Length: 219
Image (cartoon, rainbow, N blue to C red; front, top):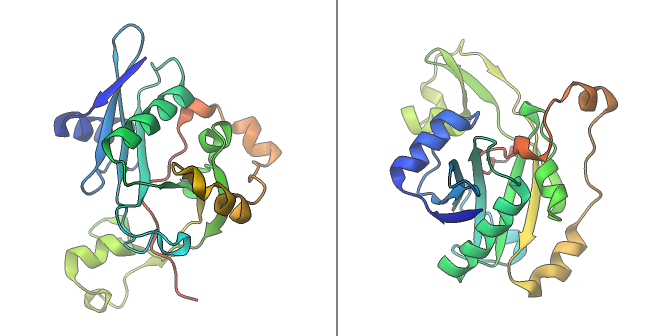
């Protein structure tokens, strides 16, 4: 297996065809994955994330924390966990200022972060997200609606909305000095209910990556 920096064309194709979100994150830094037969297995993507304050709680500045936003793979890779591990090694080489990786498993997709648990990430919390709105014929995250019309106050009063789904946060320290902090924040891994395990036909290779960092609901 080998990885190389992905082109914008490869990123777009992988995200639109091999990730449930059908979207490309802003300014991604991505790697193409090739198996031992030299077949392209699509891409692993990192980005700054949608939340500019992502690193605040860890005492990190912008540029020191990055988000794993997509694992848009086609399943032909020999090992998803190995592909992820190799991508982290390359990330350290290309972006040496990054000290911590954050990612989120999406409960809307019935994900609990199997791949993170298999690769020894730290689970820290489950966060609430802002509502989704039914706008222009489909459900959209509140942030998407804001970006299209500038303010939620411009929505018709009868616009339907539904509660946001939880995001399960995992962190991975690239800078080993952050390991004590990560351990202090760590909680026992979430587990699937017995019925969910029975119904789930995927394993770690199903790539339980939730998309981009949530905009947290105000308490």
